[in-house]
Image (tube, rainbow, N blue to C red; front, side, top):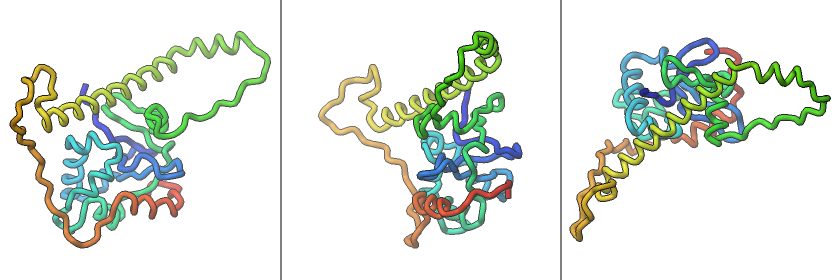
Length: 222
């Protein structure tokens, strides 16, 4: 099953791309409503999101900050920010959709990935009621849904691990299992070409996070 990272929906069922999983010291994230992007900008954005670099990044904003958008002469992150396509949202407003068949709360993904702390459950001091606990145990549908979500998260992590191993083997083929032992001659390393960015100062993910951390999340989908 092919799974795609960073894609999801908001409370209005609008398609979004998660570009920053969580802002420092908050429970807010940064998203882009992809259906609202102009066609050329959307094409460039979708290409970056689906690239190997985009799919292996924890925060898509880091990759966007390294990619130049030719129409503006600025990096993609700054272009999206200046055009107003980046917005802040509570992590509880976003569900991730790694495939059309699955929808996982962003909070669940962040907790299982140890990016945010697991909620503390208050100790139940009420008298033990066996009927109450038997009824909870009988809710097989809910347990099955939780299990499916965990399996999807595991698939995402496994896919990311396979991609990172392949990147490592591309840099050093001799490390691939079963490869011939390295000789004294240095192996050529294929270093991908990156277009140099303009000398003008560009927006960084840290600058973007700082600017949004001072704002309150909008009440509705702008």
